Amino acid sequence: MSMSASFLEYELHEIPLMKHKIRIKTIIFPLVFTSALSAAVPLLVSGARPLPFLEYSIEMKDPRLDLITVTGTMRGLLGEETRLKISPDNGGGKLDPIGFAACGTDRSPMEAKREGDIWIIGSGGKELTFSYDVVLTVEDRYLPEIRGMMTLVDSERSRITGRDIFLVPADEVSGGIIIDIGLFPDRELRATCLSNGNRLIVPEASSLDVMLAVSGEYRYSEARIADTDLVLAIAGEWAFDDGEFFDVVKNIVGREIDMFGSSPRKKYLFVCDRNPVRGSKGYDFYGVHYGGGMLLLFDSKIDRSQLYGTPMAIISHEFFHNWNGEFLAPASDSFSWFTEGATVFYSYQVLLQERIISEEQYLEKRRVIEQRYFDNPELACVPIGDACNSDLSDKDMVNMLYDGGFLAAEAIDGWILEKSGGKYHLIDIMRSIYQKNPGGVVIDEEYLCLSIGEVVGSDISPFIRELIHTSATAILASS
Image 1 (cartoon, rainbow, N blue to C red):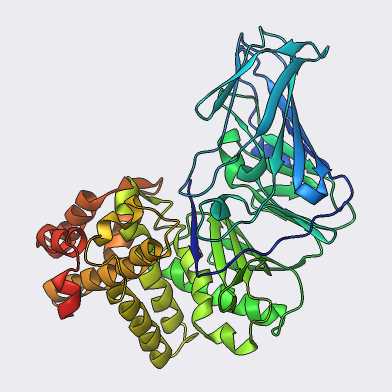
Image 2 (cartoon, rainbow, N blue to C red):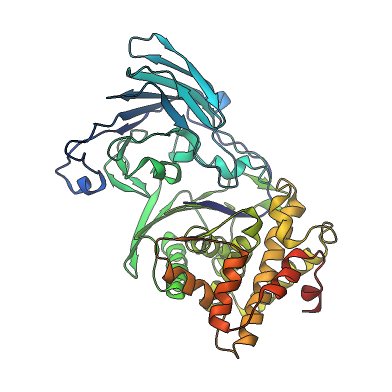
């Protein structure tokens, strides 16, 4: 699974946290459920060795420092060593546990050592407890940390992302992950996974990092589009009403599902919240894709007219990553020009096709992207294909990746259209790859070129080599 982000420029703005303690409990254990939720929890195979289970609790340690304490207990049959790991780094910031320590249930210390992103506890087969602190921070948006730390807890609401706070078992554990969240027990809780009251069920430990859950002062809307359930959770007051915004979301979702023929998932949670980070030109818009969750952070002063403007590309961009980025996963950072570039390109195409933006708005946005690309000071020395392999805390490199990727995707789309005599577009190639690989596939430049060749009957690789791996490419200049 992947997490991706789309963004524009903004700066630091702190989020106030609640001053009372918070507790979140996570349990992994082998139970047979008689409720509808039982389907999400796998049962033990008869005769198999029982697997251990894990219980988590979280409390606010110091609201002035935005510091929380995470405590976990491992029970059941454990091995000589118990291993916990950080969720995979998907291009952004990582969880950074502070002061990790472990002990037996009798509080006798256990040896714990770190090897890379894995903590190894010398448990000796005994049940154990471990704990660590996590700082909840929001830094400058061009620093990697902004992509990894999206958890928010204040006096009104909570927004929990699994990868921000949980170490996950490096070895197999039993059953599903039961998460009890009691921050706002009298308010509805919604999440990307199954939920019942304040209880969540994440089907497997590997899905914990992309879990997104909200509670507190959120308002909810629901709809079903093409056999796909959509939930909107929105907080705060806006210049538009919830129904208007949800209509835009539904139109975008419907269009993109139609483009690919089906949806990779059957449930999506869209969370609309205030962007806590101020940019040089005021508040801005920021989106993050967590598997079945889309976190949309908007300028709180957004004008109602912008519901029908280019800022809505945040929605179309993040939802498009369900296909391009997750189920069509890049083999390495060197293919990010396509993952991000084609997604930016089609995010505006979707808005245009749904008449969320006009032809004039689209052309103006394209003009801005093209101008920013050719004005980029890195243009002469950094090819589009190398932008993601460089320093992404540098705004110019970020712009090179997104702007150059957009123009490259547009050029490839034009090449396909010309070589196929107007019969095919780039989206036809992407849909073909997706439909041939329903479980997902890792793609790279070679895979893309072969897929285009199979459909069009011509070799695009020389065109892409010049387009992507040549600085200040003449192809884009001439177009």
